[in-house]
Length: 467
Ligand code: 6PG
Image (tube, rainbow, N blue to C red; front, top):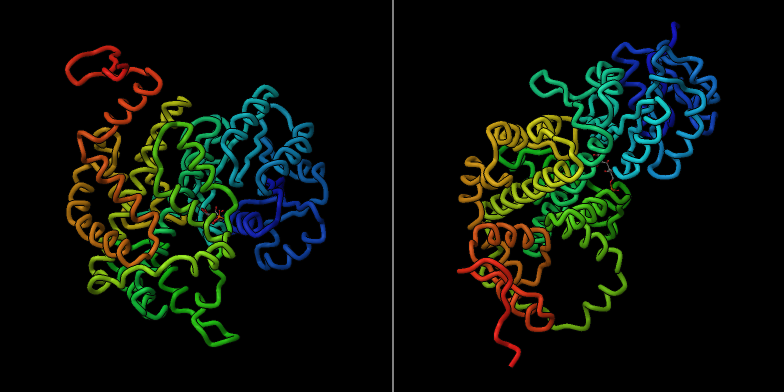
């Protein structure tokens, strides 16, 4: 084999799948892994693709196997492992060579690494990769941040291996330094929100006595309509699956305790820092945290009287379908507003239409809505709020009455629906011209003489509370 076009470091699930995808698209790939025993296993798994792959036992061997500019793609756990690998490769690489971090990194780390490596004449690309193992192997969605030169060096490979939407690759250079990893973080924040919204709808059906498989059939039908999305599709499948050991519905034997690697939490932290509400993601992160408090929830069950029975039947299937659609639109709207705020803060000039474009296929939040979102941002969105774009105003006008009925019914029945309620509150807040922070201002002025603006005069004013 001639020298390899790219080196992949880390042959875990995602690294292996990306390397095989590249080899399949005709690129020669050098691979390495911290524990070298994985290398022969990987080559065996590669089967007919093995001739396009070269294994390297050490960083020196990997770098020696690469064509120039040398491209080293890291697919290792976020955090210290990335810094450790950069420290290993940095002395072996020269001016113009490129390091790509394809893991889920905290974008602050990516900004720091881009600056450090840039000072040494190296290029760094922070690459968000979405789609899980299947996506990485057959077509992920990829969000790149870094120098133009870094992108130019790898764009042909990334565009060849990416998912496509109507023939267009779902891989794009979205901005400098941490822009790609930030977009991926917000993607995951939206993913958390959507998963939570779906789980809440499942919870309402379950409270009404509906069996998992029957709920799965409803999701399957919904996936043919406006709720078409990867997450709707897989929810339908998992709800209809049976545990081979007990014969029970699979979801019934899974503990109610959600894991999280951190990207949802990062979204919420950055949203708070930017003063940008991302309340549906906050609700989803909180729901996962509450899920960990199993013992306390068990104790809580016995402490309080049960809520009233539903006043009337559970919302109709039609209402729940619309409620989920409204929630999804509002969660996406919050996510894009957060992207816009970060772009402003970090001077990224993020193209939100291009961002929506790379989410149309391959990623976990792909849905029928993303193409409409792309169009909306191309035309321009009033006040930066997707929910104000005419297409989405129409969807919300049609669906929010059902969201309202759903939230009300869940409140009466005592079924917790933090994300659906947060979505409704954000919708109602942003269609209420005069809210209630006038009272907050009065309170602040009362106890701290913080001053307030008057509706009829500019400048700082104080109230007559001094006595
Ligand atoms: C993707 C996913 C992925 C994420 C896992 C687990 O876009 O392919 O977002 O990047 O890491 O799904 O995430 P949590 O452990 O935080 O749920």
